[in-house]
Length: 605
Image (cartoon, rainbow, N blue to C red; front, side, top):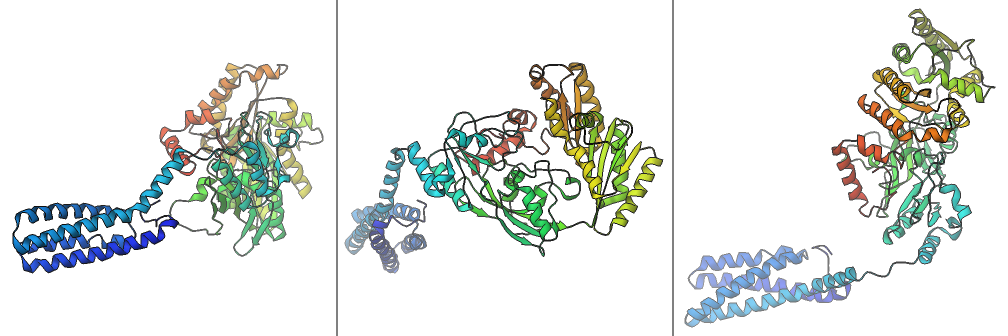
């Protein structure tokens, strides 16, 4: 109960009686003292007493019990002063002093009487805190969840839970007391309140396509998984404001299709776009292939709706491009991987559909030449440049090995390749004109060695298939050690050169699978075992290889996680490379929003 709270309901009449009596007594005492002032010596002291008695009056009218506690101190002071005068004065002055003593006593006991309801309520709360109600049993908790979302969506059987308990890479497998599948934000809020009231940890989950174990529970089996897969509504499309509002469980490809149906583009594009959800994209601040032009998930989101750890449903779906009204809760939730709340809805930015897209594959001698080609392309194409993907020769060698139907457009192999795409709002003729000028200049400067430009949508799709099949070819080849890193664009060539040599010296024969979004500095820097080596034996080197790669990333001013998040996989490394100032601030934010530590425990921090 706060200082301005009214008493508990059963004491309301008592409160009114006490408050009314106090107001009357304050007025009476003040009048008494003012009446006495001109009748006897020390009138200034009496006037001061009157003012001190009148001072608590506004506090009483505001029902502030602390004001009355101060008033009671003044009353005791006046009582003592009155006793002294009553025993020393003579005649009428002595009688008046005794009258003041009596009034002070009445006033003091009225104050105590007034404060009794607050005291009783405080004692009741103390007893309740000392003897909390018995914890809800497991079965009772599950029944309460079933009452909130329906028993069909409370999964407890191992075979029903299995798809939700192992991550995409099958690196982490956990246990859960239940998998809960709400259909509406209000149901998510009800479940979070239930879990908070009974100390049950929560693991939010979207499409379960994450690569760092961020949506997988631990092995203790105490947590529940709250899956948002049933929340797939497209709530609204606004082509004037260029926004689309969706449930967090919407599949990314479905959002792209809904935008296209309205004549707009939602540019976030990932290899897992047929399975991943918008909520998961925002929770990990996903990037993809078009960050160079449109930005990552954070930059594509105008507002979110989320359930906070205390169970409150916050609606931040306002569609504003400018809003400088203090701390941005949206930006705290995006990239937090469900540790600060559960995103249940999002308002996303839309863009005009390009009228033309031109795709090409360029061959180069080295990553350093790729950087020179990027700079030249930006000078020629400007904002037309949508994608700029680097691929090493070994990447496409793996693709051709495991997917022979995919063909390279060159008669010979080259050390490096860049897949680039221009998107034009004007016309295809304009886009191709820019492309031709760019390629002529790049060949003349010997920045590139060869180039193949797609002449149709089908050929463009074939070129993109080469890039998109690299992760699949890696999986077919066997296990490898993956790194999702970011390095300042100007230092990427130095990073690759230094780190490749260090790894080759430490592990002779290793094969580097280096590819990624060169245009925004994000590399997938993966290490495959030497030909013929047992893959499980090679994975024993993972801690040492990770440390070498991440140390080099840190030395080059980069980040150990560009777009996949931290999850369980990189939590210790994050603590190693983040500055103490950042970690302390992150922990303070976590403690402020989630003091019980129930939101996705064991992730990020």
